[in-house]
Length: 302
Ligand SMILES: [Zn+2]
Image 1: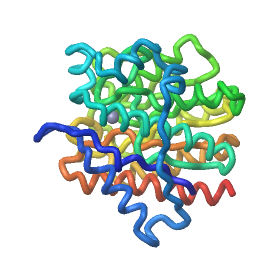
Image 2: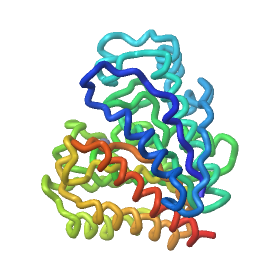
Image 3: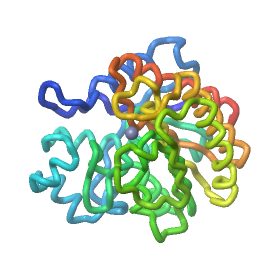
Image 4: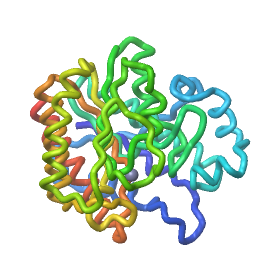
């Protein structure tokens, strides 16, 4: 299974910033340790061009990000200080999902070791998200005729509000989000299917909610490709998530989603999305388990 990385593009953050930049390098090191993810092949992500980004975003916004012309409020909303490194990293992270999607069409399953920046809207960023990699990828593959329809399965603990907004009124991309009802964003957008969960939701209730909703969405979507925004932040030790899933529960979630896609005959590209544990190593370990589950799902597709 191919895994695309972009952690060598680091965005400089002030000391004490709450974004766990280090988890990406940690994850890539774990994935590259011999024997940890059988059959994995690591590939550096390329870079999304302005044209690639403008298929999902307002071209004016793309230009202002690229040139460092965002105003103070826009920068604050993103939550990262602007730098050319931030722009480059965001381009690489988006291209990683594009590449994972193309590979998934050929091979069944692929992953981006970054991405899942689902709070980015067409004309603005938010919540550590500059560009919406899922939207950039779906649009890239639609543009060249590789796919007609896609489904975005968003299991990050926060609602995929940017993705929902970008694809609202477009029935060629179906959006599904299962998330904490009381989590950021406090004003939710409307996905095609939203599954809001109460604070403190545990493994059993979570998996039951997923099983009650996802199969119908996949069946109705008639999608050529699934983009699975995974997320380590439903974990019980996450600083921002309000759910109480165990690592085993998140792995069960991942196995369920890959199996449901396979049963429906849909290839899957997975991205990592959020994860803000007090212990970064624990967050990286949860993402790693997602990659391991993806690799064994890839074998089942082969
Ligand atoms: Zn999140």
